[in-house]
Amino acid sequence: MNRLKDKIIVITGASSGIGEKLAIKVAEKGAHPILLARSEVKLKTISEKIKKETSVQPYYFKLDVSDRDAVERVFVEIIKDIGNIDVLINNAGFGVFDAFHEANLDDLEKMFHVNVIGLMNCTKQVIPSMIERNMGHIVNIASQAGKLATPKTSGYAATKHAVLGFTNSLRLELRKTNIHVSAVNPGPIETNFFESADQSGTYVKNVKKYMLQADTVAEKIVYLMERPKRELNIPYWMNIGSNLYNMFPRLADKLAGPFLNKK
Image (tube, rainbow, N blue to C red):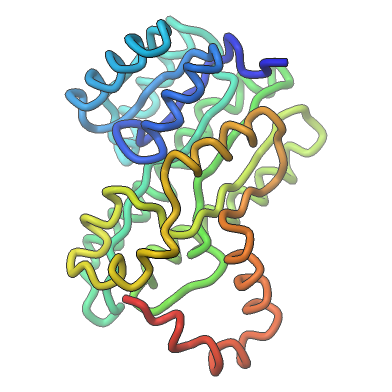
């Protein structure tokens, strides 16, 4: 049974990486992807590609999720002109890796505006109609960094900790409804994310063999949409490490500290 057919699925950060891959894969399932990102040129190109490959015509809107008024305006337009949103995938986000004493506070502020406040604002726009219909699915792309912080990710890890905290709380608030709330916690993914996050290239070089492919992550997220659960951790072994770290933090600091310092 195709559980995504005819569903309206909004994807933020859809101009590249797993957002782009997700848009293609849900269209292949017969869903109606709505692409949101800052680059209208990229959105148009991806939209044309999806139309050519799947015969599904996606909608797209230029949007910076850190712009509160723009988020509200775009979501009102989507719901009014296209229809109620069945699935929201909060994928937009970026990171900058720096030791905290060297970090630029503007970068830290921007990360929180995009990764946290933007995600929360997008979520706030869809919840009323989901509650009214008693159905829907909110998928927040967090990170293993939200479970296990490492050196030089203090700002980025803080935003992903916030995303996980928000996601878990929201799930409890909606537990008596048929609205699903899921967190996706991937390890490093081979995308253009690291063009800004890791400008020196050190981290990518050190973890290259562990990096996930965007296509693989997107496939697992599609499966999550078809069979909702509270959390998706990719790869599974990295999540085991995160859980062990939280259970034995002092021992892990001593034994795993050098391994975690890859930046």
